[in-house]
Structure formats: C-alpha cells, structure tokens
Picture 1 (cartoon, rainbow, N blue to C red):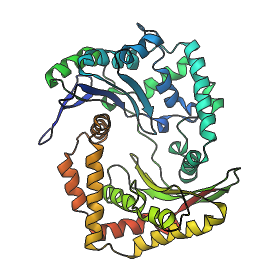
Picture 2 (cartoon, helix red, strand yellow; picture 1 turned 90 degrees about the vertical axis):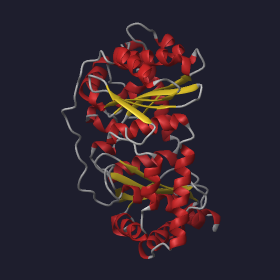
Picture 3 (cartoon, rainbow, N blue to C red; picture 1 turned 60 degrees about the horizontal axis):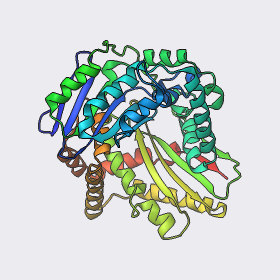
Length: 409
C-alpha cells in the first residue's frame, strides 16, 4: 500500500492479507470474517456466536485438546469473538510459531467437525454465559436498548441468543450458516510480527490458498424507518440504569470521524468528558457514566449510559439533556476544539501500542474499506474537523425528538 508500513496481498481465492512487520519476538495473527449475528435468520438467533465457541472443538485431524494445546502449549493464546457484523479467530504467539499458528487457524476455520458431544457441552457453557449476562443489568440494558432502537430488524437481536434457540442447533445448522455466510472475498488475514512478508505470503498460500473461491452474492437487509421509543422496565436492582440514544452514521459516512470526536468529548473514556464531569465529579450522582458510538455497514448507534440511585434518576436525565442542548446550541471555541482533537489523537496513538489491538484494527479496516489509513492521515482528518461540523452533527444526533430511552428501575 502506498505510504504506509502495511503490506497487502490477495490470495487466488479472494482472501486478503495485510501485514505490518515489527521487531518484537511476539506476533499476532487473525482471520476476520465479515459475518456476524445480524446475518442470522430468526431461527438462527445466537448461531454465529455458537459457531465461534464450537470452532475449537476438534477438526478432521485434531481433537479439541490438541486444538487448544497447539498454541497455548508453547505459551501463546488462542481466542475468538463475535460481533453483530464480524467473526474473528486470532492468536498471540512467539514469532517462531508463525507456521504452526497459520496451520491451526486454517484447520479450525475450514476443517472443524463440530462433534455432537462437544456441541452439547458447549451449549451448557453458553447457557451459563446467558444467565450470567442476565444478572448484570448494566450490560443487559445495552442489548435491550438495541431491541428498542432497531425494533424487528436482525441487528436488534443480541449476540448470545436464547437458551431455547441454542438447544435446537445441530451440526447441520452450523454448516448451513457457514455455507451461506463465510465467503472468501469477505475474509482478511491480519498479521503483526517479525516475519518477512514474502515468507508469510507463501505460508498463507500453503494453508489458506487451497480453499475454493466463494464470493458473496447476498446482501444484508438494510435498517430503515427508525422510530424513537421510550420504555421503563421494573428490575429488582439497587441502582436505576438508563440508556439514552439515537441512530447515527454508518461506517462509510463522511461525518463518521466527526461523530467519533463528538462522542469522545461528550462521554468518552477520559475522566474529563463532559458527562463524567457533570454527573460524577461535580455532583457525585453516578459511579459510571459513558457514551458510545458504534458504526455498522448501513447505520450506526450513539448512546449514553449511566447508573444512579432512584431518587437521582430524573435529575441525572435532565443533566444529560442539558449537556446535549449545550452541544447543539454552543459552538466550541478554538481552544476547546484544539484540546479535544489533541486528546483523541493521543488516545488513538496510545491504543496502537497494543500490537494485538493493532492487528485487529488494521484487519477490520482492510476488511471494511479495503485500505488502512496511516496514522498521520487519521490525525490529519481529526485536525481538519471544524466547530461548525461538530455543531451540525450534534444537531442531527443529539436532537431530543429523535432520542430513545430505556430505564431500569
């Protein structure tokens, strides 16, 4: 790729490869697949996540123990996760085990056999995960908020699925989902480590190049027709929990980077975010208050979460709305804007120090955009954001009449 440290290659079957060479003795390799829980049919709810769990349970040539021990037995880590739009298998290991890791990732992705005995056991594990999740209202409320906002659409459904649905899944269910949703042109192998790119490509051709080309023909059902909604749910909890939010920009929208900055100012990870200062630092009204912005292929979601004592619930909601109104009605001064940009740029720079995060980030960018912007380009885009753009985005996304609200009391 031009003017970057990243090297790319496309295998004959359409699987793309991206690599950044480092001088570390530790390497990271992952396979990112553009298929997640939103690609499930209603009767498949929870299947993408179930596959991610079950992919380690044995292949044509390895039993489950041998799969788990192949990387972990030499001090590495094998892992996976599912989102609404991606499934990711990845590993961290000493550089000398690149070949072993590429072989294993290929084997579990393309040759897993999903034995019924192992599937039965894994279902119980996920049932426990679901039950644990239900016991955590501060996590559960986000899934229920998705259901409120994306009502009736596949993206509304939570990733874990339901215990009832889970018990119906069979090996045939798994193979059918993989056949329908795992396409070679929707896969990226991402690598960060101390290996020559030519050697890496030969290795990946050996382990991934034999897979037949399979191109995506189907398209996702677009989300349209958002209707703001409000719901209050009685919960037997000490705190009240609240999520307020609105739909936002998709992954390709030109205003997405502006929305990232707005979200960071309002309720990002830093303790000096507007919402943290307003609710926690000045008034001691909430232990945890945060905002988040997630962009999908066709839509996005912005929301604010806080937990507080029941007597403070309405005061806290009013304070959140006050911050929204301030953002919509008051243009940031030059100094405020400059500080906000420096903060976001610094956070991004710090995050790239985690080589595992870097591997996942460049892999996802290449999967979605077929490119990775160098950090200097990302920073330049942030520097170019104007106060007027922030004001415009704030008036679109923080519009009181477009907000949905979910409260646990």
